Image (cartoon, rainbow, N blue to C red):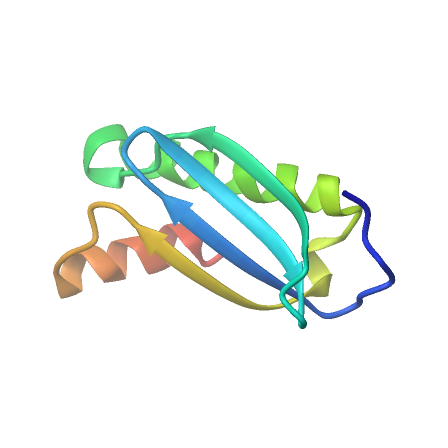
Length: 97
């Protein structure tokens, strides 16, 4: 899918135990690109592998959307393995970039 001139994009990431899916959309909700990678449950694969899976899924979605990371104005993450405040702190640390 190609970007349709949108400059402000939204990012959604669904990080699970078996796969990670990222979706880039414009503000009207039109999906411009999606990307997939391996699992990103940090409690199973570790923080480094989880971060890499998320990074790769996002990079693939951006590539398919013909967009740059600087175009993302908002992002939402749903990550498997994040149940307690300490888990959320861990996830924030490795997705911050």
